[in-house]
Image (cartoon, rainbow, N blue to C red; front, side, top):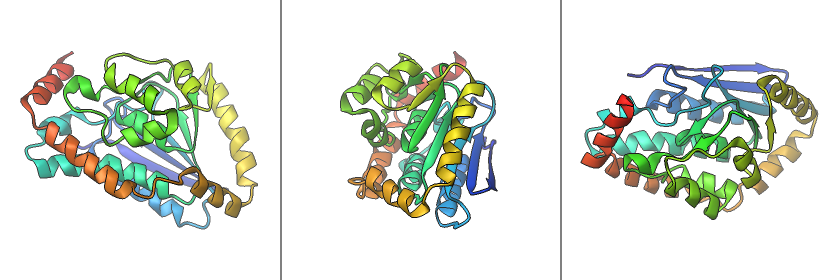
Length: 252
């Protein structure tokens, strides 16, 4: 079941990309494809100086992979294609020539943590707790892992990946470097975002482009790495363990 949306606006140099899905802003393949395509398009749009990435609604930021699509995967090729969707979004963020600000208003799970890790500067609220739940359903954060590790370090990423059913608070995520600022409310967060956006829109675009390259130095091999990681997840998702675990999660 492929529902949801990706909505964009471009105003005064700021491109806003919003994704949404009825299932707590989960990420089915069509949303992943649209996100990657949209980020890439704004990268080459001279009218765009800065990107704001956000999700719809007032509750979860992103529930990660769509369970409906995971359970529908029937072969390795389909599995590889689905998980490659996350790889394409992360690589689109990585290679985008524009700085990307993340607006994390609520909980982030699995691929949602990957999205939050792939932006260049993340704002969050106290409600934006995080969890890498993949191991709990028999997979593992293989595709998003490099992005998460790059942002918070191997030790903290391992903590999230191994203790896959435990939520970590927004304060914990901030202390590890995932979020730059955490606010008590969405209103205060949006005020903070607006203040930074105004400063960056009036900054030198070439300087910001050069900074972006510096920030992501050492990730040039990620096209290959994340593709290989997608194959691991695409194989594991076919196991009886994973299928039973996903069905149990859907019923809970």
